[in-house]
Length: 255
Image 1 (cartoon, rainbow, N blue to C red):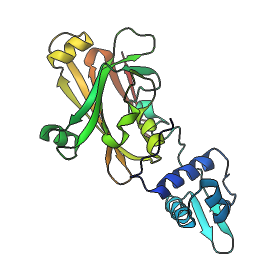
Image 2: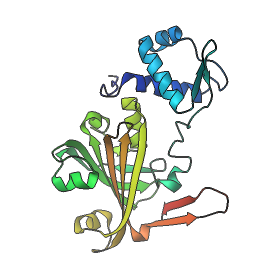
Image 3: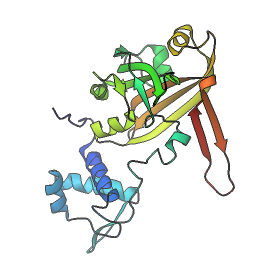
Image 4: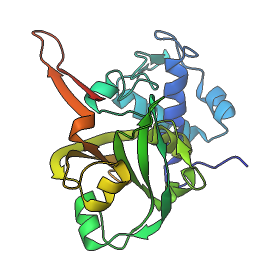
C-alpha cells in the first residue's frame, strides 16, 4: 500500500519540493521557462492557487524568477536534493547512514517526560515513536555507537516493523511528508557511558564517550526527528581541518 504524504504539510510546499527536484534533475533546465500554470496544474493535479504559492516559495529562495509577459524562469538548480546536508555530510554532520546499518532491537510508542521534553526542545506529554540499537560499519562485527531515534507520531509509520536501517532517516521523513527538513541542530558533549549501554556496546563500565544529539526541524520549526548517538571514545575520532580560503571541513569516523 502506498503511504500518503503527511496532510499537516501544506500542499504548496509539497509541490514546491517536487518542482525543485524536477529542476535539479534537469527536467526544467536552468535558463528555461517553466510550463504554464495550466500545464503545471494538470501535471500535479492541484489548483492554480497552489501552483502560484509553490512558485512564490521557490522565488523566495532564488530558484525561480518571474517577469510579466515573459513567464517564470528557472534561475538556479538550488541545493542538490541528494547531497543536501551531505556534500560533506559525513564530515559536517557525522551521518554514517550511507556506510553503516542500525540494527533496531527495541522500539515502541513513548510519551515524553518533562526531562525528555526539555532535552529535545519540545512539549512534555507529546507522543513519539522510539527506536534504538547498535550501529555497525559495513563488514564490522563491533558496533561503533548506540543509536536512538525519536520520531514525531505523524511520521512514526516510517520505522514501524523495520529491523535494520541502512539509509538516512531524515530522507525517509522527507519522502513521506513531501516536506524538506529546514534545519538540523547538532550538539556534542562528553559523557560517561551508563552501565546498560556499556553492556550493549561491549565496553568497560564507566567508559568515556561522545554523546551526539540532532534535532531535525521542519520549515515551520516542528520537531520531526530527534536522534542520539553514544560513541565510545576508543571507537570514534573527530578531526577538523582548517584551510586558508577554503570552507572549514570536519572529518569523523569510527576507529
